[in-house]
Amino acid sequence: MTALHHTTSFIELSQEALAANLAFIRSRLTTGATFYSVVKGNAYGHGIKEFVTMAKSCGVGHFAVFSADEAWHVAQVDGPRPEIMIMGMIDEAQMTWAIEEGHSFFVFNRERLKQAFDLGKRIGKPARIHLEVETGMNRTGLDDAALQEALQLLNTHPEALQWEGICTHLAGAESIGNYVRIKKQHIQFQKTVKFAKANCQQQPASIHEACSAAMMRYPKTHWDLVRIGILQYGFFPNRETFIEYITQSEEPIADPLRRIISWKSRVMDTKMVPAGEFVGYGSSYLANAPIKVAQIPVGYGHGYSRNLSNQGRVLIRGHRVNVIGMVNMNMIQVDVSEIPEIFVGDEVVLIGRQGDQEISVSSFSEYSDQINYELLTRLPQAIERRIIT
Ligand SMILES: *Cc1c(COP(=O)(O)O)cnc(C)c1O
Image 1 (cartoon, rainbow, N blue to C red):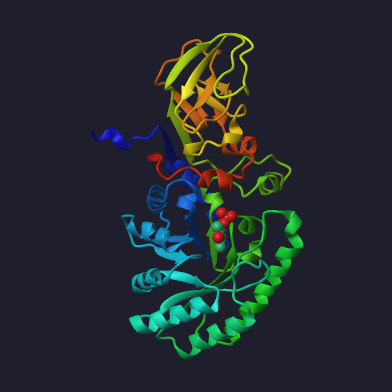
Image 2 (cartoon, rainbow, N blue to C red):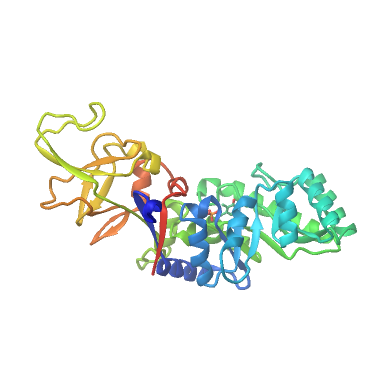
């Protein structure tokens, strides 16, 4: 039995859509800036192995991840050796691996600075470090004193530490409400970069500040490297950045991005429910008339949020039909009374297109009160991913 790995639903990934998104990103980039594809969170739920495979075949050679285990997955993918940058968690054993393999990582406190220095020295190969500096997000980042310490070590021990980059992260570039805070961060970052460069014999290979929202809104944050996540998957960071983009000229502008992901399943069963009966657990849905119900083998245990109870929509045979009753752990029920003929095994689209209908991730995330990022990254790793052209 080899089919045991088939899951009750599957995710399709469109290579063509990715190519279009990458072309758009490249068209917006300041000349010379290197594009790092951010693939943390299982490539925003798309599947890290499949997504990196697709990106590599589009010519992407630079990837950024949150943790060292994600870096390991990127490194396993066939093809030319990519540059890998670890922006978050890395423990000692992993750091040893990263230094030996030549992957770069963020240094944002004294402990990590010391660890990188000690290991670089011991291994006899310099750790490639990005100094992440505090500019006002107040999450991770070196303060002035720790930065000076880092610069001193870079000065005196180039055999243990190689200055790969200096960087910061902006605290919400997608919302105009954060404009003043973001501007202040940018000004602070400019000052810090100037100071750091003036106080070190080594110079950073790159300076970086921008995520997707900053790339779209604040071209001065491109420097020579950008870290792009959500845009490459075909989503604007939020509605505000989308509207700002499409309303920038008098002429109507179409959405330049294409969704890569579709999520599909199949009808597992159907049944008639007489008028006056409740459907599923409890009493949240009453059949006011005789209805036909289909059971779909996808539930909150598969990432289909319980908030979609009596709210969600799916596509079957080109019809947009409603989820009725509660989302169960492994199942939803939909009212298919309007579909003349329906069979067990019929395709069900949870996210994506069927005929001329579409269930968008954003409508889905509005119904379920999640942001795109959250909905996508909650799609379980176990769901099978299939790459299509
Ligand atoms: C996630 C992340 C990004 C990418 O953010 P998007 O909004 O998806 O483009 C960039 N930089 C850092 C430090 C991140 O953690």
